[in-house]
Image 1 (cartoon, helix red, strand yellow):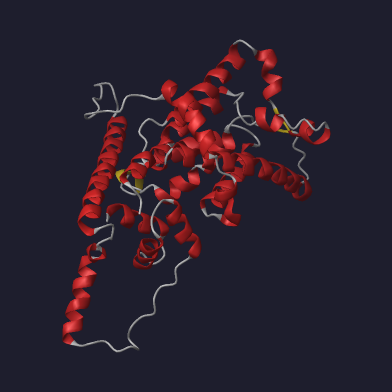
Image 2 (cartoon, helix red, strand yellow; image 1 turned 90 degrees about the horizontal axis):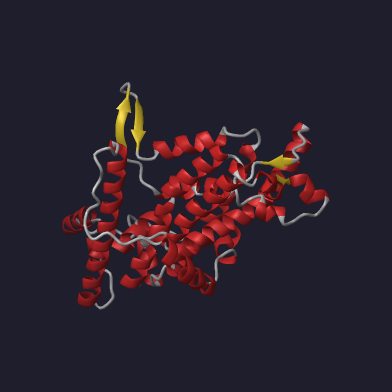
Length: 346
């Protein structure tokens, strides 16, 4: 079972990796655009040079720094919004996702370019530069794991949610270049592969613990900020969306910390066992009432839900025991996100 220390690390408030990805590439992009334009050729994502001249280093330089300030601005805003994943899951797991998506998207970039040339006859010699593949890959967990909360409605039919602004930024980034759709498609495919654990990508492409500790010692003191002890004060000039976003983040963090404290008390009282009677209490009461009226036969008893061993392994990697993972997946009808919430809350 996951310990409170593990859960506190999973909800890391400081998010040093997100801040470094927000500040460092943006600063380099601005310097290359304004002061060092003659060095931009070293950061161009030139596919022709990669395939014909074997300049493999362009796969690193060309996919790290944006040469268009519009792409820099949009990708920075998206990274700022996606920092919630580093706060929830920890810097190591977040960096592992970015590393896996970055490497997979490089492979899918080359494949999609070859497919476009073979099917449509389009010859693509270069693609937009920047850390765009992992940014588009983050839309996959954003769509799957972030709840959709309606904020308002426009004209009585079109709903505005807490996720609308992020999707608008993604659409703006998608329309900023001629061939950026290739980067978006490769990023989404790599995000699906990593998030759905196809071919065990999350086990192969992961950041070693010693590398995570090294960057924690170097990046965290530089980019970390003080953890708030009270509610954040919002200036009078701030918009309603900014105020709502800050209060939602604070509420989300307070709920997680209260769950940690509640789980610690339950471990002390129950000796590490989960009180599964708290799951679906109306269903349990209903079953008890039916049992008093008439005892169901063996033929009426539904068969147990088959549990995916892959999802059990993912829950065990998070620190939960196999028995608790099996019970949670069966109770949630094999839904990994619901099972994880059950284990955290009970």
